[in-house]
Image (cartoon, rainbow, N blue to C red; front, side, top):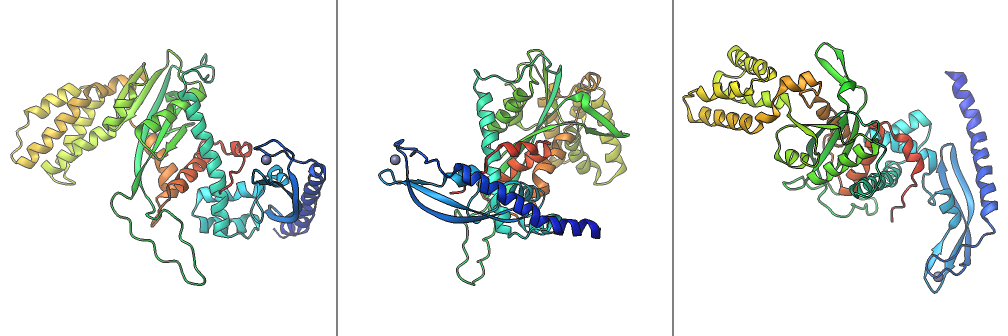
Length: 430
Ligand SMILES: [Zn+2]
C-alpha cells in the first residue's frame, strides 16, 4: 500500500508537467492562425491574451489564450480553449468524465467524497454538479438525436439480416418530485440558503423506462430466479409517445426489428401501453403475470382476510389455472361467485373486467411454450436501477433539465455504453 502511494505521490507532478507540455505544444501550433468570424466570414481581430487555468486529473493546467473579436458583428472567441475543450477555471477532460461517473452513482456530496478517496482530487459539489450537467446535456442531446433520426422513415437503421425472431419489450414508470422554483437559489453573502418549499401536488413528473431484451438470453441464476444477460434500456422524462419513440429507435439502432421479428410487449394493463403497442405489426401482447395475480390478491384479501390460508389457496389455484392458459375458466368461475357485501361485489366485478379485457393477453401456457416469458420483472428491476437508485432518494427534487441530464448519463452507464461519452463534447452551460 505504501509503495503504491509513494509512487503515485512522486509521479503526479511528473504527469502534470507532461500534460502541461502537451498543452503548450498545442498552443504553439494553434497560436498563429486567426479565426474567421462565424457571422461575416472576415478574419477576426486580436483582442487580448490572458492566462487561463483549469483543473485536470493531476492538478491545475494553464495556457495563454488569445481572444479574437469581430467588432461589427459583436462576436468573440477563444479558439484555443474550444480546441482544448476547456472552460476557464473549470474541470475538464478525463477528470470531468470520472466525476460525472461518480455523480451518476451517488448524490453530488457523496461524489465529492469519493473523488477525494478514489482520485485524490478535491472538488466542490458545485464542480461535480457542473460537469454532470455539461456531460449529461451532451448525452441527452445524443439520445434525442438518435430517436429523431430513427423516427424519420427514410433514415437507415442497422442491418436487419441478423434480426432476432423474438424480442421482448416492456415499459415501467414512476413519478419524480420536481423543484418548484424556476431559477436556482443563490446565496447572498454569508446567509444560508432558504429552505426549499415542500412538494405539492402536480409538482411531479412522470419518468418512464423501457427495456429491450432477447428471451433466449434470460438465464436462471437460481431455481425460479431469472435474470437477463443483456438488456438495453431507454428512458425519458415525458409522455408515452416519447418512450415508445425511444424504444423504437433503440430497436432500429440494434437492428433488432426485421420483417419477421415478433415483438413481445409485456405490460401491467395500463391502456397507454397497449394503445402504442400497435406500432409493431408483428406483436404479442402479454399482461404481466404478477400484475394479473396482484388483482386476484386484492379480492382474496377482502374476501378471506389478509394473510389467511384460504386467500393463499384461492390465489394459488388461480395462478395454476392462469399459467395453464385457462383464463376463460377462471373468468367463468369468478362469475359464478355470489359475494355477500357490496364492497366484495364491486371488487369481484373489477377483477372480472380486468381479466376479460386482458384475456387475449393472458395465454400464459402459450407464452411459456414459446419462451416469451410471462412477467415484467426485468422491466421493473431495470426501472428501479435507472431511476429509484439515484433519483428517488429521500428529499430529492429535480429540475427538469437536471433530471433529464442525469438520466441520460445513467443510461450510458447501465447500458454499458459509458465509453460513448468520450466521443461527445462537453456542452457549455450558458
Ligand atoms: Zn463578423
